[in-house]
Image (cartoon, rainbow over all chains, first blue to last red; front, side, top):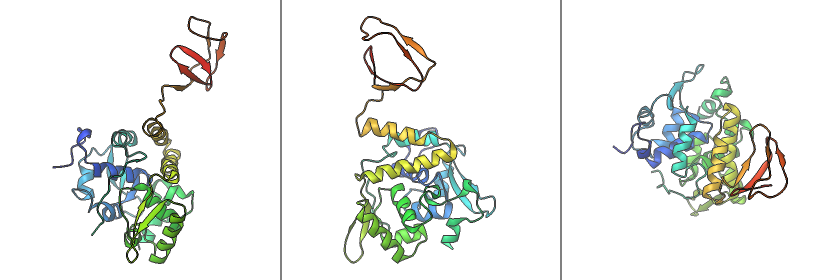
Length: 102
Length: 170
């Protein structure tokens, strides 16, 4: 399995870290439906499963109080910062090119 | 439907999904820009951006044209062009930091400062230990061995350049 549990931050996939970075640069929250459009083809597992690998105090799927739609929220931003720094994802100056979506 | 989902009219700020917290308005250009800045590792086709932003094809093309003119986006291919972010463009760096700044102002966080520190260390090669700001209660630097200048009262928020044991006001 490519994606590691929360306790082992060093083994988190680059794509998962890029997902965190994307989320953080979009206000640390995004509707699940858009996360799936963007990330289901890129991540090893669907967005819901990827989020479930981490403690819910760090990243979680929450329900919008009035619309009831699921949103993905990056909750522990300092934790995400630490991981992103390690992988040069805060202000990327090296690119990890990704193939075009089919 | 996509547009309605994104706007979230009844949602409070906590659940708002307007680009950059609404600072640049809820325009197609802002939406495309936010999407591209958030993931600079991908190649984008117009239809990808249509899906991701909920905007129409002509409006996406117009936004991409504007971003190309600013050097933020490069495109290749005539019939089905593919677009990517120019990560070496300073506007890209500034907009990335803006994204963190907006988040920090909403959540009282520290993401932008962390990113700036990291950027200074890794890209500008500025050693953060070299430049420091006095934040403690006022104190007095006395004349000691290897220190130049006369005694000086130090107040909070004054910036000093520290070179080894030599302290000089910057």
